[in-house]
Structures are given as structure tokens and as C-alpha cells.
Image: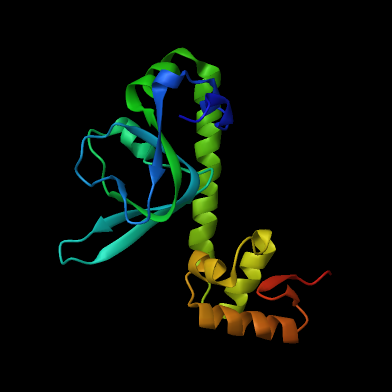
Length: 195
């Protein structure tokens, strides 16, 4: 198991008995829709998608969790998981036991506040992601994504993050460079142009 000190706050203050680390392979499931909820998960590295399957068989990705992000937060207050947690990029995750978290929340207001602040930041990021996805123009969407924090991975990763094909993302980046709004730093690396 990874040392507890490697977990971000407020999870770093939990005893080792409250958590269980797990290696994840692409295609693995951390949990399935309808299973009894056993806790909140933190992605240490890799990527996990929360997926719900509709009555007609369609698949909807509800959320994406990458390194440093939690998932299944609502499961702390629900008897079962409401979706599947599918691993799309291999890595490691840790599950914090539901009962351990709820007991700590009940007896430690500082922990509860720190956890709420962490979750509130994730809600804000999710809402910004929804806002980005609502931008119709590919160029405007790519420009907004670059302004939000730049490109942190490949163009393919950026495209997936903002809901565009990689071809549309490359075309938008090329157009932004031609217009002087973005700069190409090297192969597959872009940033906003200085103002």
C-alpha cells in the first residue's frame, strides 16, 4: 500500500485502516451501478469515467476523474452506486471507507470543512467543463480551454477533455495560431499568445 502521507489533504489525516489502494488496468471497473456503496475513491494516477447505461442501451459519461480527483462522492450518502466506474487509463486509485469518512466528518469539523472545500472546488471545475462544452465554435472552445490553464497533455487529450475530435482541435489550433491568438511551442504543444 502507498504510504498515507502521499494522499492530499484532508485524506492524509486518515488512518491506514480507512483506505485501500488499488492498481487499475484499462477496462477495469472500480464499482458497478447498483452495487452497495463502500466509499469514496481518489484517483492517484490514470483516469476513470463514471458511466451510466440507459434503458435503450446507450452509454453516457457523467464525469471524468484524473489524477488528484475524487469520484463517487454521493455514495457516502447513498446505499448503492448510481453508475459504473470504468478505468480508461491505467494507474492507481484508493478507496476511503464510507464508515470511516462519515465517522470522521461527524467528529471533526475541521476535516469536514476541508473535505467540503475540496469537493466544492471539484464542483466548480465540473461546472466550468460544462460551460466549455456548451461553446459551439471549435475555435472559441479551444481558445477558452487554453485560457483556463493551457494544454497540459497531448492535443488528443485536450480534444477529449473539451469534447472535440482531434482533427477539429488541430484545425482550431492552426486557425488560432494564424490569427495570432495562440502560439505553437513545438510539435503538438500550444499556448495562448502573450497579450
